Each structure stands twice: as C-alpha cells, then as structure tokens.
Length: 360
Image (cartoon, rainbow, N blue to C red; front, side, top):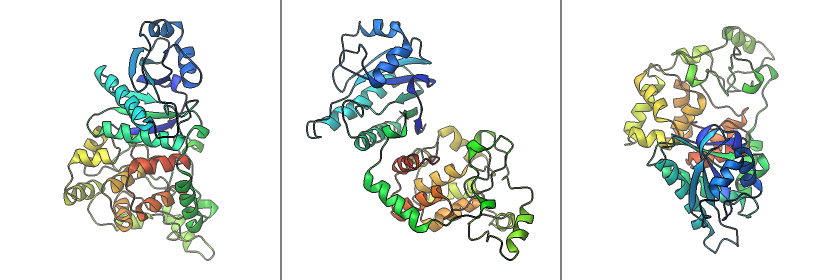
C-alpha cells in the first residue's frame, strides 16, 4: 500500500494507529503530544503511567481510547543538536520501531506526524526526508497504508533550493490558458461536473467506467478553436476526441504491462515504485480497457523511468496530455527532465506546491 502526505489533524484521522511524538515520560506535553492526550481523554494518561516511560528512538503502544483509532504508538524523537550527535539514526529508529509495532498489532494503516520537527528543533526539510526514507524502506517489504500528517503548510518544508529551482522552471515555461479552458479544480465542482482540462478528464478510479469521459460538445469546441482568434487546442496540449480515436489500438493496460516486461521489472516492483496499491494494480492488469486517473498513469511512467516523450505516449493511451498551462504538469516535466524518478521526492514537491500527489 502507498505512502500518503496529507494536511489534517492527526487526532481526527480514522486509521488503525496514530503515532504520538511523545516525550520520555509519556505523560503528555505540548504540540502533537498534548493534542493527542487531550483528544484521547484521561484513559490514555492512566495507561501511559503504567509503561514506565520510553527511551529516545524507541516506541510503545497503547489503546486509542476516545480517539478514532485502535492504537496510539508513542515514540520519543531526538532533540536537534546540530546533526552530528546521532540525531538521524535515532529518528530513523523512531519510524522503524513504530512501524514494527504497527505490524505486530496487525495494523493495516498508520499515521505519523513529522517527529522531532516541532519543539525538538529538527529541521523540517531534513525531518521529512528521514520520514520518507524510513517509511518507503519499510513499504518495500510490507503492505500497509502509511500517512505523513501535517497540520498546516508552515509545518511542511522541502529544501529551499529545490523549491526555488522548481518555481523558476515553472516561471520560465508557464503558458497562460484561455479562460474557457482554465483548469477546473475538483473542490470547485459538484459530482456531475465533467473535467476535461489537461488536469483531469476521468472520474475517480473507484467509480470509473471502462471508457474515457469527454465533454459532450468536444467537436463544437474544436470548431471554435479553428475560428480566427480562438485558442489553439494543440497549444494548450489538450487531447481531442479525434486524437484519442487515432491512437494505436494498444490500450493503456497493454502498454503498461509491455513496458514492465521491457524494463525487466516484476509487477510488485513496479506498483510499489509507483506508490500504487496492489489491488488497484490488479484491476489494471485484469482489465484491458482500464482507464487510470492521470496521477496514476504518471506514477507508472515515473516508476518505469520513462523519458518525457515516452511519458507523453503512455499518457496519451490513457486519454491525457501534459501542458505548459498546468503547474502540476510542469513539476512532473521538471523531475523527468532532471532524471529524478524518486516518486516520493516528487510528491513532496507536489504537496509543497498544493498539487495532487502521484499514485495515491
């Protein structure tokens, strides 16, 4: 199962276990620790009093009490002392020991805060890297849905240079779209809205049919585009219905499976590298006409380490295109052009720029 980065209140998240960034006494404190104890009620404190504290880098487990989770895993992160006093090793141990307990107690989902990134002073960008590296190493061997939960954007940071480089890449290449083709945001639409911008043309994967969704009057839109002064559909990289019908007969599913074989990968290597759930991959494999979401299609292109042209070709088979009028697409292009196919680093950047994440 995948790793998800979400912005939420960890005390309100429904999952098997949440992780508490605790202090060595396990008796509550400030920040996430205090919020979890407050939401869980006095029962959590009484149970913690019986545990005898916890050493830095270790973890202990209790019931969830009044929280919407079965368990609370308490771990004590290191205080930042310049980075040369074993802080990284201790922080890695926090994630490793917490995940070990989650596995031992048959948890299928667990949510982490960014351990040590608050009052303990661990630099947020470095704390995030340790979290992602530790969790992804675990997920290579185990199936579990793991969340990294941040309360607000101020508590989440990627490296300043990476952020600046991506911002400059976007600024250099961004092409403003004509208003009639402006991206329709999911949160501004009702369930009946058909999205047909470069961002999304298909429904959510859980409810999707075996055919692509296009606007009902796409031919009319093409006629408008052909008129003098109208926006050029090719300029904004939108796929027309004719483009889709003229594609080769190979479906997205067939193309994906062929690419996996060509790369000498196993199915599990591919879907784990793509940050995609095993059940979703099984649907794609078993249905020749399966149409993925755009984020899933790109996730597989990243997992397969396809070139930009190969990525565009795979996307086209799913009914999508990349556009310089779309910040999400430009971020993807930045990473592919840079030869960086680490999907978790890509997702960190997408999250920092308020974009939808890959694969999840």
